[in-house]
Image 1: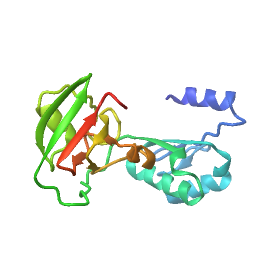
Image 2: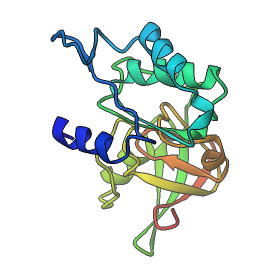
Image 3: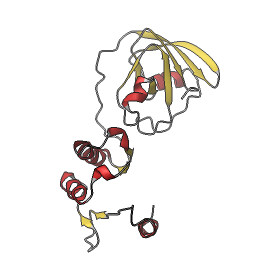
Image 4: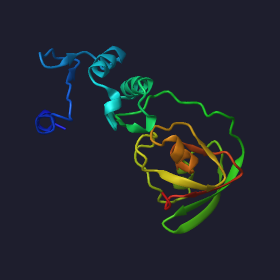
Length: 194
């Protein structure tokens, strides 16, 4: 959004819309100066009662999002009330919790058609589907956009990174296929039932 649009929102919804500008390179009388760090987050939250808000919408780099989320949750905000969009994911690779070796028989439901093939457990489900020639949906391949969302209908999988799905959605079998490895010998995933 552009500054004029944000200012218009503040003008129109001033009783329920609070706007703070934070500049890291320009000093302004009407803005905070510096990075959005833990100190600044605490200062802003001290001026506003987080419990009086239904939802929080964050957008920015992963480190900033993590800092703001952690402080909100510390102050009693429910995790599923904090929505966010990342500019990008961190570059460090998250280790899968358990060693994955061997193969899996995978059945993919996509556009009302089932395709069954064998894949390695250490492969991502999305990569295996694309290598098989399936037109599986995806965009970022970094676990931040949810374009590759699918449901595990049989078997199990684990994700290396998950910045999108909440605990209940994971319990319902939803996975980000770009981050998911099968952990069972047989797995069925459905791109249509999401």
